[in-house]
Image 1 (tube, rainbow, N blue to C red):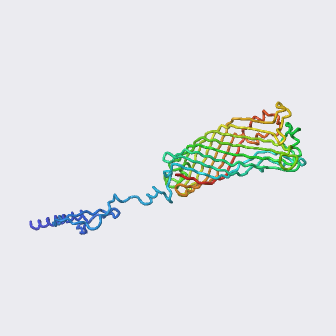
Image 2 (image 1 turned 90 degrees about the vertical axis):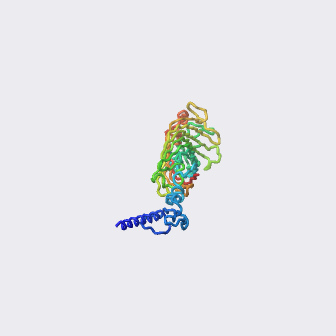
Length: 430
């Protein structure tokens, strides 16, 4: 009985001894006990097994090369690595480490004109012939350019930028020929040895020439929210991946200078239908220069349509001190017009005045950007800009009572205007 009990205990000890080495090594010898499953993505390195457990007293080397340990293998998916380095579609997300940017846009814009007046009528039928109003001078398109550059900081989400944009000056003319009378009363002025009305009554030709130019310089601080925005270095690179949202927001604050100038000229000739230096030619010119200095605030919103295409809207509003220069002259090839009555009787008709007033400006842009790659983007959009509290020609041209120099010198600064148009260009970040 004791013998059977001893033999059972010995058999159990042998089985435990066989199972222990089998768990500790994998040398191709089958295990007597079931092993837990091994994850194939994390192979276990083989180690040398000692045969001393089998009473052989020698070490048997493992077969085959040693597999790499788990610490040598990446646990990140290729898609994650791509998003962290180059981004979806081959360009990086967010500011992408950019620290500088430049951009340039070509502009095509027009100035709305809804006021005005008639300058010339047919001397027989009294029908209007020359208008300074919308049909002749409104909705006329001008070319221009916009350039900007910036330096990014704060991880690329903020920037200090300088922006210029302007429209090329262009003149437009409305004229008529025949027998024309001026609706501007020049009876208070003498010219070429007689009343100036001799050159503006029964004229062979009369015309109005008008031109304006616009220039804007901005120095701004801009910033984007945690999910990106439409400003600064955020103008480059892919769209998705910035905070996990397709929406982005930003802000702008800075100094702005705006120059808006108008040049208005009425001309009349009783000799022929061309302005070629005849002494009977008479000109009445009004020039207005608005110089706005002030601060602006604004915000922008950005939406990722795809990983490369984003749509945005940007609004800016500013309050400005407007310094205005205002000049008027009546002249021709025969010399200057001279006042023939009033407090300035005998003096040349000439107005040189300046004024200061408060003006407001608002600008709204809506458009899109296409990320060509991580550094280059294409821009396109539409812009509307409005000014109020400015001096414009239709408010300051004197249609009569020209001897009232003091009243004419009191510049009218309650005018307003709207310009709008499209633009297209590129942005480069590095």
